[in-house]
Length: 605
Image (cartoon, rainbow, N blue to C red; front, side):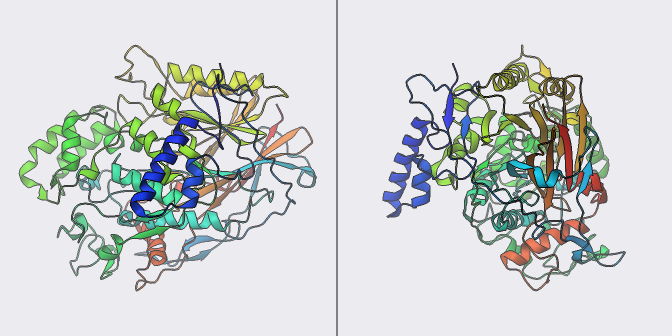
């Protein structure tokens, strides 16, 4: 039987419990934040297009769960004039470097124009004047909010992979808050003028699968004060004040490897980096999708290892490593030869005498999938809603992290969990989830009044779903890769797009099958330059085609930086500029013109 949840009344038991918890907290604090109470009790006013939030195994029909009243439909989105705009998007300007060598400052650069792609259907003249907006949402992906002082960070592998340590990553919270500010300032969807219906994340919201990072992420998204510091509350204890020339020391006169490349000395930088950051929270509903860094230690090792848990909260951190040993470790990770982290564990034990002392911190402990869902359900993180941000009590009961929800009356969103609990950073789906996806798509096609269009959301791309290791919790269940998922989606004409991240690169790929066609939209991360998010709009052209329109946005921080400005906004601007100059940064992550601001045309199903 379908188990449908309205956003306004999502998981009644959860809402009741949440309201009770909020009341208790209010008693302790002396007052209750009205928005949090309304969200917790399911009384948040429905904004345009918010409809059903469905749990795992839910159908797409209108039947209500046993014992519950019929679920009310969301308020119809108000008609919006078709008023395209460019302000606040990369259609107007992008961050671009000055000069040609050394450390390069950023400033206002050229716009990225919209490219019409007719790979799957011809774009017919006059469609702009005919089209009707179906839905519009913003995609955040690969925020990688990172505790840079976490003991399991492997900065010493920077020679092997640029993702091991980035000079700017201590500013990830300030950068993410500035991205929230950008979305809040958008006056609608850039191509159609439609209201924005929601924000979705597509995984790697955290970096170290750490409870404190999860708390930071939820406060950034829903509003609150974040202190991006762990360990000693009075000071920073990471590699950037270690005295090791391998790392940029912003406060120190040390002639480190990065200063030799032109990185500046910025006295007071580290104190500023661990100061409180205030997030206004998104003023749109938002939905969460899980990534490998949200589920696996280091983003690549199988969870539930007591050694890694104890090491994460302990008082020792490895900050340097012999190059030969580092290369061998990274090769094992890259090739997927160490999914359980056995080699990594052995290395840490053998390097114990060379580790440095830091302040232990229990908040650095890894979180479990159940704790991830529970944290999203907490009333303190309700923000603009919905309660749970897509997750429900049903996810807790079934130990799942996938669900369906209404983006708008015309569009169904399906959020997948593509992380393989067996380890390794590439992904796959278990048989149970693949069959659930098949049922969701089939139920949508049987929907009274005709099927909705479908957007599938995941962390991994089709090309990075090649990890078929069995889930230790379901050893008899097969795993399924990207090709199988593509084949399934291609059998359903209602699917318009598969939106994902993981690769940290903008790439848009057409997929055509004998039964239908759709676009795969992969978006660059917000930790590596050019630090982007993407607005996705769906529109009916009323000529036998549908358009998926994509527009990239940067954070609200100014392109130009001021080395003397260590305010929250100044740090967000530095976050972008430092990321551009990061040694090993890949200049191609922004993709080609056809991967950026686009109109992707499809035949109507």
